[in-house]
Length: 354
Image 1 (cartoon, rainbow, N blue to C red):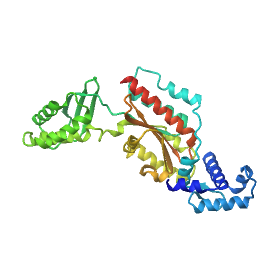
Image 2: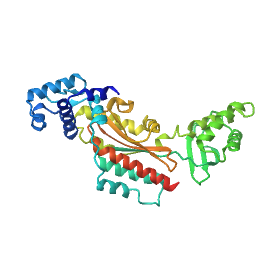
Image 3: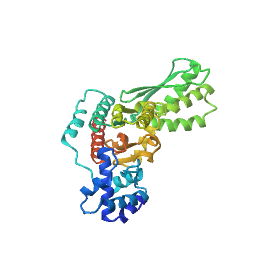
Image 4: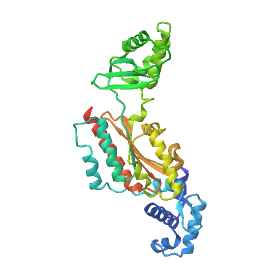
């Protein structure tokens, strides 16, 4: 049992109800909740002074905070975590929301990326937050690999897959690269490439380059190693991450400090910094996960929360994730089933097109 679960289990009914109503009031309005308004709605008839004492105890436990001089309280990150883990009531997915999400994926005529873009827009519109969709890696077997020089400082590794899919990935080649070194590198890679996925080939190449250093020209060896660095999307991860609805995050952030935090989040989203790696944490288990405020490095300075769920292919393997970013006071009970259903739809889309 973690700390918040233990605190919740040790609360009496009055403290639990006061805490729940403070959090629900804050999530609904974004404003501190005072003892007078609570007194009118509690199931037990008690005085405002009694409610204030309970709120002070909850503040002492680290679950509530007083943002201003007023008597109102708001939940802390720890308080929100306890509410989400122990008291959150998840609502049924609304038919309108369900229809909008399903409609975004009805077309079979375009690419998976375009379909994921549409579902991201729908998810953002329904939740009034920013949506994140981590597209799946391409796992088809490789047919052919080619290196193409664009300039002294730019080169492409071209990956041709057995299913006809082609990917061009930009990288910085080693200095002094010659056409003969490029041909040697391509021939060496292609001797091992056919029938292997990108992940498989990358592992094989790391071994073979190490074992056969004497057989490979130094420049060809450097070229292979430079290409390896981006074969598993290390330099291409941003293109796997589809972000929609950034402007929604400005809603409900009227104060200058809030706007500054949102600007920082915009900058993170624009650079895609840490986000794809963070969403890959969903590989550790299925189901919806909620990250609140400072619980993760990405949102530690933004006052934001992430509700995220992985999606799976037909073999029940996790291949990507969908999520919603919003302020810490988002309607978790409504957002959780929306994200969960979206993940199921995207998983089905990927499986049907495999």
